[in-house]
Structure formats: C-alpha cells, structure tokens
Amino acid sequence: MSDHGDSYPRALTPLERELILWVLPSGSAGYGPYLDFIAGASVIGQGRRGEGEIILGAPGDHPDVESPLPPVVSFGVGRTEDDDVSVTVREILEAQMSVEIVGRKRDRVSPGARIEKLWTYAQWVPGRPCPQCGRPAREVEIAPGGPVGRPAVLAICAADHRLWIYDGPTGVCRPMPVTNYYNELMLFKSIRDPETALVSSRLFEHLDGYSDADLAAAFVAYNRVKSKIDLRGRTNGEYERARGVAGRLMDFLFRR
Image (cartoon, rainbow, N blue to C red; front, side):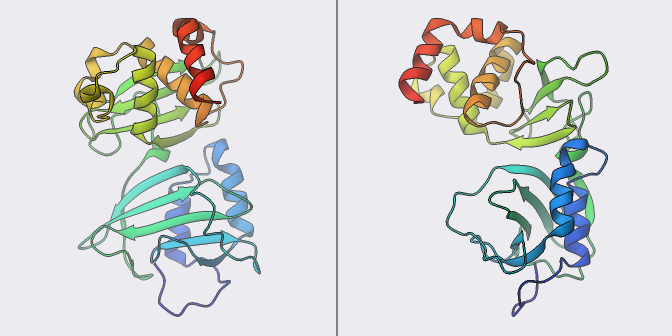
C-alpha cells in the first residue's frame, strides 16, 4: 500500500499500523505475541503477492518469498470512498510476518486514505452474528471452556460461505479455508460421490444435514493436520471414538 520507490527497512505508516492493530486487538491474550513482534519489527520489503503485501522483520533481513505462505491469523475488511479494503495478517514464520492491505478494485491503497472499519473476525465471540453479513451463524462447540473461560467454537455462515474458529482460552478468532476442512468431513462421513465430496460449496448448501458431532469431529481431524487451536487435553475423546477404527486407519494410510 506504499508509494513506489520505498526504501527498506522502514517504519509502518500510521495507516498500516492502525489497520494491523485493529485486526490484532490487545484485549485478547492470544494476539499478544503478534503485537510484541510488531512493536520491534520494521517493514523489510514487499511480499511475493506484489503491491499491498509487506513483510515485517528485523532490519537487515531479506523478505522470504520462497517458503509457503503461512496460515492467516486474522482478517478484516474496511471501506474507502470507492473501494473495499481487506487486511490480512499471517502467522509469524522464521521471524517474519506477512501483512496484506489491498483494495478489491486496486491493490494499492493510498497511505493517506480514510478507511471505515467494517468487520473483522478478531472481534467475534460466540453468540454474536456473522461479522460479515450480520446473520446468525451455525455454532459448534469443539472443547468446553471450563468454569471461568469460553469454549472453543467452530462457526459457519451459510450465507457468506465462510467458516472460522474461536479459541476461548486465548480469545483468538481466525478464518479457516473451507476445502481441507470439507475433505475431513467427507472422510468422516464416508461420502465418496464426486458430485458431493469434491464440491466444497456443498458444505453450506447442506449444512443442516450435518450434526454438531459430525462438524466437530471433522474439525478435530482437520486441526490435527492444519493446527488452528491447541486441543491437547481439552476434548473428552468422544470425537476420536466417533471416528472409530476406520477413521484411524485412513489417517495411517493417507496422512503419513
């Protein structure tokens, strides 16, 4: 989102800092390590995705544009006078962090733009509507919260075709890609019909046809491969038992 010809390293612009801190709220403990990292980091260059993606790191380091893109930790959308602007913060990898601030019509967002903050997953908690459309979301408890905390909750919005996971103990709420999760759901349900199993949008079309136990078990399996939250010691084993011997055999054969 910066002017062409920037020299690196440089400090975050006021707008960059404002938008990054918006999607990493200080009130949630799980965002603390990201805030600490940002406090000591500089913009060390542009990312592989071009205009709008910046890489934060230590001055003197070179942006890593070869490693796979890390998972998204937080996401939000704002609006300028004539465009929608997305803010994407990714997990820290090898002491670097990717941040994308891009417009829908034009990648570049002027450093002086005035942006109205519309919605972000970072401010969602169970019981609230979908942050994007304001409609009720399907909520599935993944792990209990205990006597003083909130539970871990998977949320799915059929209207917006989005899903996200809220981790009660840390307060972190992050978006999830649908395809890999849907694959786990199809494995768990033993659905092999290509017209259903290979079309991830069917999750939202047939959402009411899946029980909470189905959706939770698929998340536990997905989380084992693509970790989103720490579930060690937090589930009671019912999802593992529900998967049965066949599910564990499929893990052995296909996920080694």
